[in-house]
Structure formats: C-alpha cells, structure tokens
Image 1 (cartoon, rainbow, N blue to C red):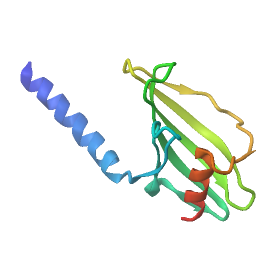
Image 2 (cartoon, one colour; image 1 turned 45 degrees about the vertical axis):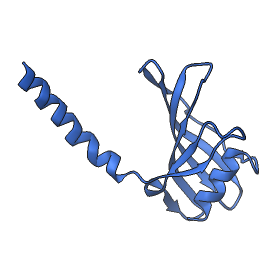
Image 3 (cartoon, rainbow, N blue to C red; image 1 turned 120 degrees about the vertical axis):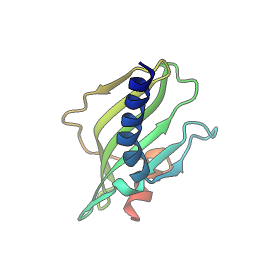
Image 4 (cartoon, rainbow, N blue to C red; image 1 turned 60 degrees about the horizontal axis):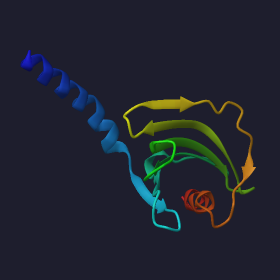
Length: 126
C-alpha cells in the first residue's frame, strides 16, 4: 500500500513540477500595508498588438471570505489604458477552490496608482 502511495505522489510531482518551473512570478505590487502581494507570471504575457494577456496571482492574509490566493487571467489594452477579467480562480484557506464565472467581462479603465494600474504599467512595458 505504501508503494502505491509513493508512486502516486511521485506521479503527481512529475506532472506538477514542470508547470511550476515554467512560471516566472514577479512581484509587481502590494497593498499600502504591505499585504496582499500581487505577482505577474512574466512567462505568461502574450502580446497581440496593443493587447497583453497574462496571469496574475494575489496572496491574501486574513481575508474575511477565507481567500488564501486568487489566480486570474487579464487582458489589458495598452493604447486605451483599459483591462478586462477573463478568468478568476479562488483558493481558500480551508483547501477548497472555485472558479468564479466572468463571462462577458467588459473593458474598464484601470485606476492609476492602484494595484491594477501598477500591474497594467508593468505588462505594457513588456
């Protein structure tokens, strides 16, 4: 039974490790209190003219809803200073996770100086 458990663990690690190794998470911003660090996976940035598509990871400390981390995919338009959310996955402190529907997320202007504005400036310089 232990051999089977070790085999399953080794298989899972061999599958997960390349994906983790390929990510290039760069700390881009955090809240004014130094909490909730926000990272961009530099290797995920896709450039399509003025549009940038990329993954963002935000870590939460003491979130009232029990969020530990959010993984999101955004598209930013560098020409118009707008962005839209394409995908949101939430990972909770209790180990559960959920994907929150964001179908048809409209383009919105980024707020300069806010975390979203800092992320926008970072990806548009890539």
